[in-house]
Every structure is written in C-alpha cells, then in structure tokens.
Image 1: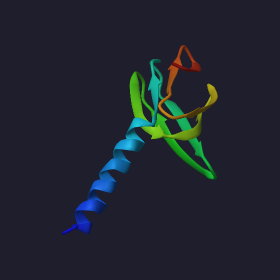
Image 2: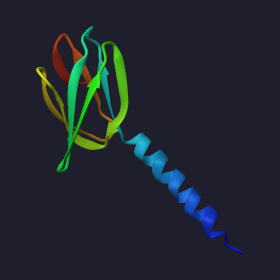
Image 3: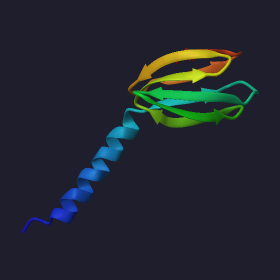
Length: 90
C-alpha cells in the first residue's frame, strides 16, 4: 500500500536538499559590517552581513547589492566575496 504522507514528506526533503545545493553564499572578509540588499524578482530583502562572516544560501538566482560597495548578479551555487571594499565572485 502506498503511503501518501511518506511520499509527500520525502518530496519535501528532496526539494530542500536541491535548494541548498544550488544556493549562493556571501562571504565578508572585511572588518566592516555591510548593509546588503538581495533583489530576487520583484522582491528586495534588506539585511546586514557582519565583519568576517559568511551568509549561506541567501538566494538561488538574484542580484546582491552591498551598499557602498556594488552590485553583482549571481545564480546557482556561486560564491560572492566582499574583500578590501570590493565585491567579486569566487
């Protein structure tokens, strides 16, 4: 007999795993806290990244704006680094 609850639960776990595999990370190698805006579709998320920290899985296809530093378009499992006041892909 097929258990639909178990199938639904398994599908949800697979979707979460797939999302975490294809997610952009933002790493701040500077000693400064930065304001960050994540533009994804018509939505903008306003947040911060502290000095010498990494924010994991912030989006899968978006534009990251580090206020006062710059903007960069990213997708998939790309890594973005703030270093010496500059924004780049790693």
